[in-house]
Length: 209
Image (cartoon, rainbow, N blue to C red; front, side, top):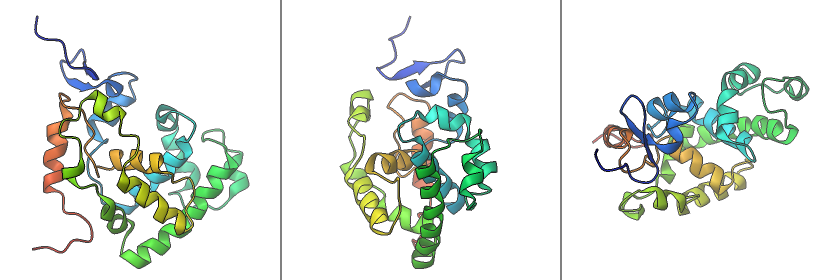
């Protein structure tokens, strides 16, 4: 018998060590293994994730993940403006404030893209400094990372620009998922792979050289 895995790490029946949350519900494993934490530069995916994080407010991410395909169909790429039709769609979270916020944010998204060239170029300006990150990201350290100075700054700037449902905790969850930080725990099999991908990733808005 070897040593037990560190707190927050679960070894699945496939022998792979994962962050505890990625080893639970069957939907979480592919999301953890294939999506979460990998750096993203695609505007559509970035806007979708920021919108879904807003819908998650007060709910679990699993609830949103189970409805993600229905959200995609209902919003037709998150550009739909038919609030009443969306409120009647049982496949999504039917919250008027969140639906109206998503439609409003889509307009604000276009303004950001015009100003910065892309939503990605804007978002990656807020990537946290690696030197300011915890030297060891164990379970205890992760539990203290509900938000960061960068997520607070991005949240403040988005709200100044008229965005809604983009609080610091929502923005930090977005940063975790879209690879602006690598919050896979030490001991998780995905952490080194994600870190290597982040090193290769060309930040949007940066010039080659």
